[in-house]
Amino acid sequence: MKKIRVAVIGCGSIAKYRHIPEYAANENVELVAFVDPIIERAEAYAEQHGGKAFKDYETMLAEVKPDAVSVCTANALHAPMTITAANTGAHVLVEKPMAATDAEAEAMIEAASRNGVKLMVGHNQRLMPPHVKAKQILESGVLGKVLTFRTSFGHPGPDGWSIDGANSWFFRKDEAIMGAMGDLGVHKADLIRWMLDDEVAEIAALVGTLHKEGTAVDDNASCVVRMESGAIGTLVASWTYYRGEDNSTILWCENGVMKIGTHPDDQVIVELRNGTVEKHKVGAISTNTKQESSGVVDAFIDSIVNDTTPPIPGEEGRASLKVILCAFESQDTGKFVRVN
Image 1 (cartoon, rainbow, N blue to C red):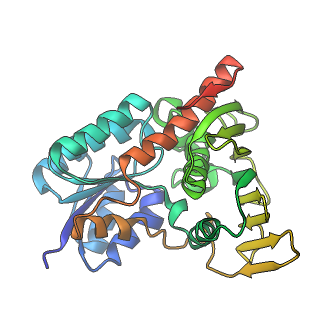
Image 2 (tube, rainbow, N blue to C red):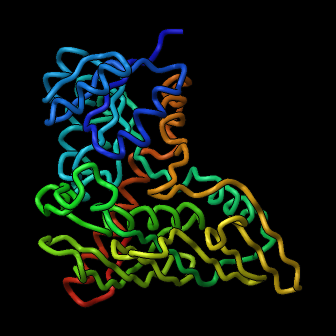
């Protein structure tokens, strides 16, 4: 079978730790191009994996004509790069948040549809084994209806994770558009929508910059959400968890509680009202210091090889983006905001 020729646009940390190694490990992929304004970064990967290095993505698309691209750049560039790539006939895997505005997300979906290409958003939380297991347990009905929940994602911030440290685009508002909410909050919005198979109906949020210096982007957000089902819960995103990194979700249900990512070994714990306790060791959730294979790249490539809809299509990325955009609106207006 002919290999899928893939180009990676943006050679920062997410490309380094996730996209490039996962493409390199996929037998259906040939890495043909790397793009980064700091050309040395692109050249290093081209030397390692083959393919050509470019400073500019439009030149790369014209010269290389890849079958598919990963967009691993600053948030403000996701939409223009995705639309340009789709217009050249390339399938697109774009990092989250997929866009800076709902209108951009809509335009990206429309461009992919018009050009007959796949569009997938890198919401890797859905594919992590503990979350997959938790959804299966929910769907089994043993816990009954979800009544309340809390889901949080916090770490020390991109100054520890990004290839550029404190000088990263993550802290420049014109490029990042949003901070912890766009980096981490959108993951949790997507996770809770998917896990509960439910939509966020309304949200109230406090979003601010509490500790990161010299930046206008948010480093903390605490939100209260009501789902369409009536379930209510909290969603927290933080770049100031300097100790005790957290990516956990707890669901309190009619028949008991499910704890996900609260224990280092037992990733999913189910405690029922009848006293039974089940503990599941199902593989870890990735952290910044311990990367697990995300499954995102393999799922994207599978959808191209088998001509199926990607498991996390543009429409899903757009719905999750909408939740955090409404959180910012709530912060600005001091009111609950209807999401749908």
